[in-house]
Image 1: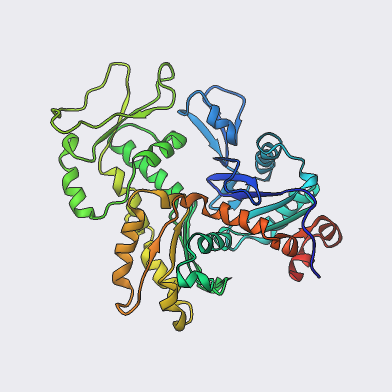
Image 2 (image 1 turned 60 degrees about the vertical axis):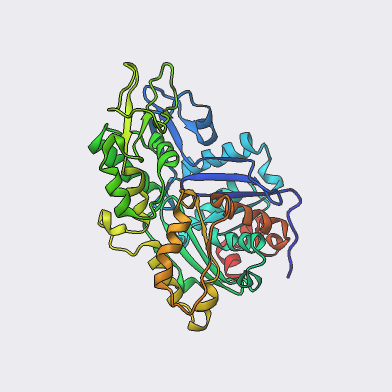
Length: 408
């Protein structure tokens, strides 16, 4: 029996472990994107939640606390606080008048799903609720963005979602997720940040307690090398290396968020790094490209898994042979990590030798790969399908959630 849409708007939340994207179904972009955590400055008693971090005076010496660990919800109390702020202060809505569409991780645990439903219906009182893994919505958005690709016309392709906790390679056929072919690589934005912290702490300054600041530095300065051996050779020039950069750290007086010093321009004399007396400068060189290299070579940090291009081949190989040629013509790179400069070109370069020469291959990334999942969720919410598949509050109260899920 077909169900109706909620009377009020549908709230769309891409509930990533690193960032939350929150907005309303049918809109082109989320109303707000902010870190999925609480943060407390050194010496302060009051913690900042989510979007409040954007208003922080400085971003150094912050202690972060996240409700999700390794991609799964583990701190329900903190999640309630973060969502409460989203609904009250960011979106300014009454949950009892709305439906909720939420992304969830692959292979989510039943107790986590049950606890999420309890929070959604009993504590916030939403009218209806539906959740699914992000790539299922992202595939919808990819088909909308690239309708000229024949594979998209039949709902077929591969989503490579490089997120905060890990990366997933997800094949689709005829709009359906091929769950048995999904592959996970335990490298994501968090691992890259941690690796960058370790490298610079060993070579330059101790930054092990500066997770939030190092995330900013990573996003501003890291890139994917197209030729690692050649770039490593160039980096041996030290401060004369084309990859050498200086990041001026916050001082809490005149500089609160840090900034990248402009590199020496052509014709300008290069000399040993010099700083003003009050400046504390972090030196970066080959770290800028060796950190994202983990996406292609996890064994560099002792993780015995394939790099993302090889993992994609493994995922495609787990599907029926007849699908392989079509799947390789529609490989979409999404997730926050996919925004790293050079990532798409390197992925395509490394993947081509692994694919039979007789197969066409197309690898691409949307203009804003970190927003692809939310945009797909917004399309889903506006399509009317939400009302057909969502669990209503009445169903939850009658069945407790499990029976209703089995009926969908």
